[in-house]
Image (tube, rainbow, N blue to C red; front, top):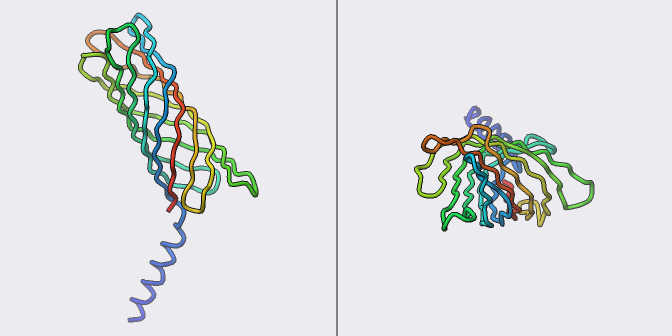
Length: 180
């Protein structure tokens, strides 16, 4: 019986030690810049990117997160063809807390692996880097809202047919975050 009680106490202490360490967040926004280049550069029209992430706070200044995102933009002067990207990323986020203020500025970056589809061609895999910065406002201990500017560019270009396509994307996103 003593072992059961000690086991329960250790379990409860472990759970409370990790309270407010994890989070989930989701957001959407507007992309207003980007291009694909397969020998001829083509600009992308505005689109609506969105993402969902699950993260772990490793102290007050750094967190690591996994993210899934979807970006879709019409390719200018292409007769309605789209550039679609579905990506999985691992991000590092640096937070800069300002004492006494509920605003949390942050910046970060990550490595993503994604499926790239341009027009009617089959989708192909590519690797990209993304960089972002923004701020969030704490509504309470669990919820915050915020916005950021994100830039993504391929470093291992998807090869569609016999052509390698580079891809870049710039967008502004708003998000809601829940800490647990």
